[in-house]
Length: 369
Image 1 (spheres, one colour):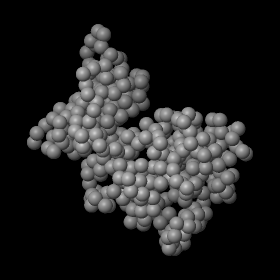
Image 2 (cartoon, one colour):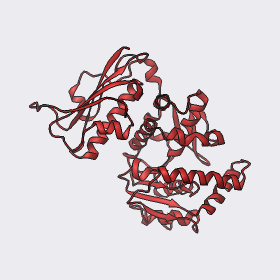
Image 3 (cartoon, helix red, strand yellow):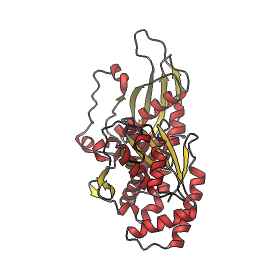
Image 4 (cartoon, helix red, strand yellow):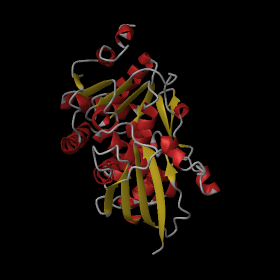
């Protein structure tokens, strides 16, 4: 075993538990992306916080947010050095370097002042050519805004109409629409094509860190590109849909995807739909909606949706599939406590959109237009 030491540091917005855990999580994900390792490759991790931070141990981010439960972790407080930057979290990772190449340290935010000589460029031309979901550009995502406006999170069970309604809300607000589910479906398709074992979490993490997923506007909604190939229809094939929950359930995979989604949302003017957007992905969203409907109505809607895509759907099978997904959701999906529930059982798309617009900052004046 050949060990390489990878250093990193990030600024922390405030001495609060949330700020410390968020800064640590973002730093670890950036280090993972830059060096291509998985949690299984980490031999040990040492965290330090500047003396002005004590609201949380940063190692909690590794265990609770990224799922690094088997990694030996150590936390310490730094000594107070006069003139040194404050509000920083630092980490030293010892990683098995077999096939990993040279170590790339990562310094984010004001922590870059610690290493003015640090080169942020990729270590190899091959790494520089990679363009993963973490580096998605705003023009790759469906929308019409310029990065300003509210951040809207729309959650709910399958068949509630999230994508249709979210897309319409984004259009009315002049915001970007980001289909978070499409990202996971594209990753699931990539895993199937690459023959990645769906139970191999580290392999799926590495795939998530390097896969090229792009969302582009199209006449009938977002087009999904995987390595430049249009896979909009392929990602909704039954074999892909069946394995998406297993892929999305890997903590490291979710961490990579969530980091990309949060970076887009920080610019403002984003409508994002999914299953845990308001509670996990965008807890600071300006507007949180939980869209739901009776099961029979959702089954009928999903059936018509599948038939509209040319699929030979069976109503009873669709019902069984949604019932299974509801059971999974009861174990995995929790409505954000400050989300407003909107029941669309007796509401059409336009009425649902009007209801949500009335809840959004600046949306009331657009309702009825």
